[in-house]
Image 1 (tube, rainbow, N blue to C red):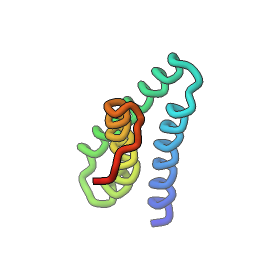
Image 2 (tube, rainbow, N blue to C red; image 1 turned 180 degrees about the vertical axis):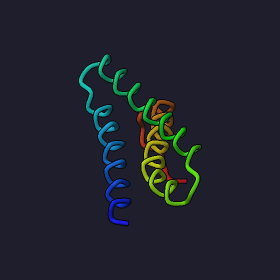
Image 3 (cartoon, rainbow, N blue to C red; image 1 turned 120 degrees about the horizontal axis):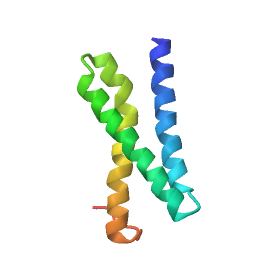
Length: 89
């Protein structure tokens, strides 16, 4: 069980690191490269979720998948609103 928790934490750290690279990219070219990395990581997570055949495997992927899904949702919202803060619903 300890290895499972460690693997889940490491996978989440990988996702967070890719988001960090994107947010701190100093040039448009590096923003584009970081975004492509995030897209590929997201696609890989989606494929792994499709292949997962038990709750343990899904539990391993779920935290990082939710984090990356959230990033893409928030990025789209921010692009639409121009980074203006939105009032809570």
